[in-house]
Length: 226
Ligand SMILES: Nc1ncnc2c1ncn2[C@@H]1O[C@H](COP(=O)(O)OP(=O)(O)OP(=O)(O)O)[C@@H](O)[C@H]1O
Image 1 (cartoon, rainbow, N blue to C red):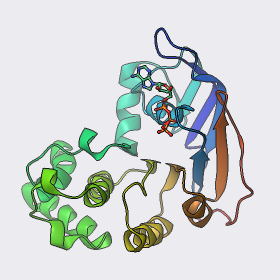
Image 2: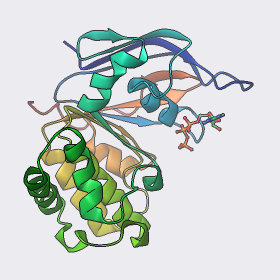
Image 3: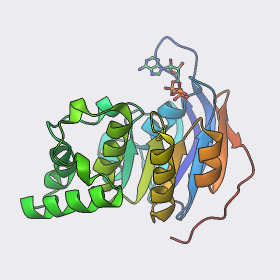
């Protein structure tokens, strides 16, 4: 069973030319699907449709084996598929890094102690312990991006949806991010303009062009076992 199956997705913003005009995509366990395409092609739009932040005009979204149509159908999808937005400021809203990471688990019913344990685990995993008590809005762009990933990993999603995760990262942090992603068990969809990054991380690459997804560069790696 595919984790996600998007079929013939059509979408346009009001008063603008259509963005998606029959996009198809599947995501299987163990896959890391990279998506490329020019600015404004609709990559972020597609990720938002996957988690129900936008609803397609036509076509279907099946996630975790169930067709998803109404808002209520997407609650489970958003719990199981963690979207890391392109702009970290859309995602970080607590005073400190630790509070931002603890927010999701606390919201899902974790105790204060459990949440603090999760904060420590994900910060160690991403090598970010030094940022634990920093004021979130005073972090650099690259630091914010890594913290955003930490907030999503803290929710232990089954699928990761990453929108331009290398934006603003220096070489060392980009290399570290590659290692972290390759070590994660989750299937993921990664939107990236960075061909080197896509080749390192992706098990499959798609190009979004004129509203549809097609195979891009040949895969360089085989799917990892889930
Ligand atoms: N809320 C909105 N209202 C109207 N138009 C929008 C809105 N959000 C995005 N768009 C437009 O829809 C198109 C697709 O945007 P989207 O952000 O999905 O592209 P993208 O492929 O992610 O681009 P980039 O590579 O620049 O991040 C663009 O032309 C954009 O201007």
